[in-house]
Figure 1: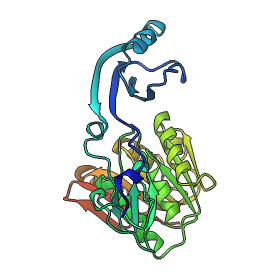
Figure 2: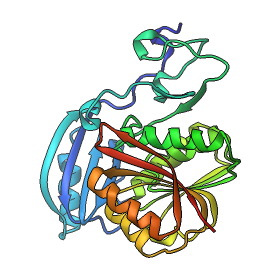
Figure 3: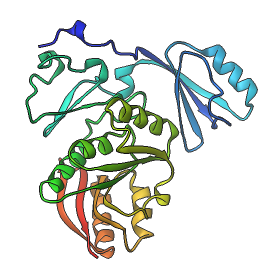
Figure 4: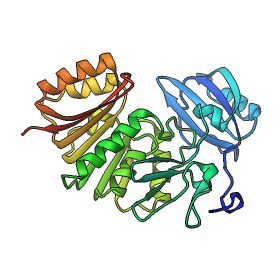
Length: 291
């Protein structure tokens, strides 16, 4: 068992978050050492700092008059994610924050995973400030779907749409896929995914790129994974009567949305191989595209 002093410290303490209306006109304008990242979505920005940075943000607002400070928050790293960021296990995968990484033959039982064995595959996952630590039911569904598919089929190429932290692309390659493309519209998510690809030494097999789902859905692949908002998924399926992937994994669907997606899958000649649901709330699908 490893002692707590054998792990590296959590690099994230309290977060100082500035919520802005508007988006920064250019990346890299904030050079302060306390700046962690910028999450931009739908015309709004969340600026993350490791210490109070009122003066930095005030200067930014002076330089870019279209920005408007709506609110600011101080919270712990675990509060931002809604739960403690700790190791967890899905099937044969042990998913571990880098600051709790195993350095010996096992893990401290206080860290939730007690033993590793010859069949355990470890993934280092630093979620940074990107939503999604990997513990959501839809993430578990996707990884179980990948494992189910690989039990009977060889999957060489994967396109992961809406990759977030990059976990699903990394899991696919760790489980035996050869190449993966990890795509997200959000720049901070792509940077976070690239970091996780690097710390898992998978830079030759996985590439993280920024772009919209619609621009990548036409890429031929053995497997397309899409754990994204229903509105985006609906547009993808409505706009494509034929998908160039051989198999698809769709997740992130609430019950009413799942019913609509099942109809879209039938129209797109996609046969559902297996379904998952979490307490009847979150639904996921593994499907085969019929040629």
